[in-house]
Image (cartoon, rainbow, N blue to C red; front, side, top):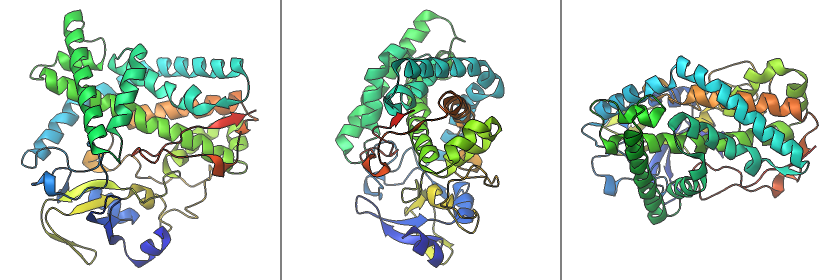
Length: 374
C-alpha cells in the first residue's frame, strides 16, 4: 500500500486509526520540506475539535497554545539545548559505556537464552536518562508505568492519567533538587536553578525529557537488534568489522519504521501542496518512516544494508524541530551495537520472526520481547 501511495502522489487524504480525516505525506523531499515549514504547527485553534491520529495525550493530537506556539518552542529549545551540548555529551559518554558493559556482563553471566528487551533494550536507556536528568534509577518501575500509560494510543483516559502522574512526580523531583542546593548536579537541578523557570516549567521539561529520552531508544535498540539478526550476513558483518558501527547506527535509525504513523502537524493557514488543498486546522501527518523508504532517494529502500551509501534520514526530523536528543541517542546506539556484536558474535534470534509481537497500544510500537541465544 505504501508503494502504491508513493507512486500516486506525495500527499494523500486519509482516515487515521481513530477515524479522523487528515493528510498523509509520504515523499522524502515533501516530508523534509514540511518538517521545517511555518505553515504547520503542533497546536490547533480549537483542540477539542481537531483531528487526532491516536488517543495519546502527548502525541495523539494537538499540543500547546496556538497563539504563542512559535515563541514557546523557541524558548523550550533555548532552555534544553545547552544540556545536550558536545561538552555535556562527552561528559556522559563514560557513563553510557559503563552502563552498557554492566548490562552485557549480566547477560553473559546468566548465559543463553536471554530476552534482550528486558535485559538490555529497556534498562539501558532508562539508566542513561536517569543519569543525565538526575532521576533516581530505583524509581524506574514507577515512572516507566506512567510513561507507558502516557504513550497509550488507544485509551485517552489512561494516557491523560499517566501524563498527570508523571508531572506530579516531576514536581516532587524539582522540590528535592531545590532542597539539595546543587544547581549543576544534573539537568533537572540546572533547570530548577535557571532564572525565570517556574517549578511547573522545570517539571514539565524534565518529564518530557524523561519520556522522550528513553521510550524511543528502547524501541530502536530492540528493532535494530532484530533487523541485524534477521537480515542474513548483517550481524556477522558488524561483528567482524567494527568500523561499520556508524553505518549500522544510521541504518538502524532509518530502516525499522516502515511508515503509516507520521508526525502530527496542523495547518496554521490554507495552502496548496502538491495539488492538495490543505485547509486551516487540517491534520497533516508527516510520515518520516515512509520518507526513509522513498525509493527515489534510497536505492532498494526496503533492504537493511550496512553497506548502504550514507544519506540523511528523517528519523530525528529536520530544521527547527530537529530532535535535541539525537546526539544522546546516537551515543547509546553506538555503544550498544558495537559492544553487543563484539561480545556475542554468534548471537541469533531465539524464535521465528513471526512469533515476535509489537506493542500495538504504544505509539512507539516497540517489541514486547526479544528472545536470543548464542
